[in-house]
Amino acid sequence: MLAYLTGSNKEMPHHKTFYNAYEFARDVEDAECRKIICEDFLSTHYIDEVRQVLELILKKARIGATVIISEKDIQTVSRQIYRDSVDVLELNKVLFNQKTSVKSMLSMEAVESLIPSNFVIKSKEYGSVCFTIALERIK
Image 1 (cartoon, rainbow, N blue to C red):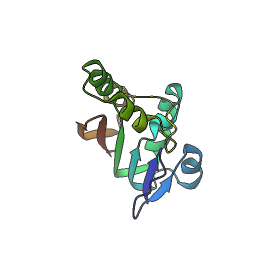
Image 2 (cartoon, rainbow, N blue to C red):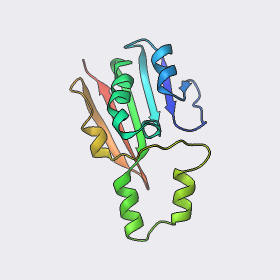
Image 3 (cartoon, one colour):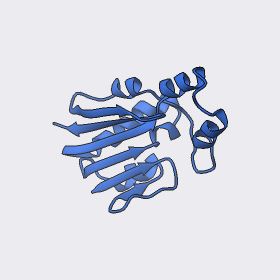
């Protein structure tokens, strides 16, 4: 199975789309997914729920599966606000609009610290306000 977890109303071709953790947990067996794309999904949960949600997501990946996590990066956004290099009105439109339900903001380092030892980081990068981490399940 190819799964797409999103905090917005987007869909991805050839992937089964999930908008909340409950549906994902109910509809997907452990170790069923060959690929999981998690885009602006963790931030739809309160910060004290993120560890549990990420554990749920990762246990659905089979050995050799790819998991891609992309989120707004709080440190990058904060730097841009501090340096006055981002339009605050535009930033608010991106972060807090009717299509999203943001409850937390994360950093790449915070997410990395939650990755268990049965996953390896294949790549990581920063975008203008986002980070992306690609993982592979090794055992």
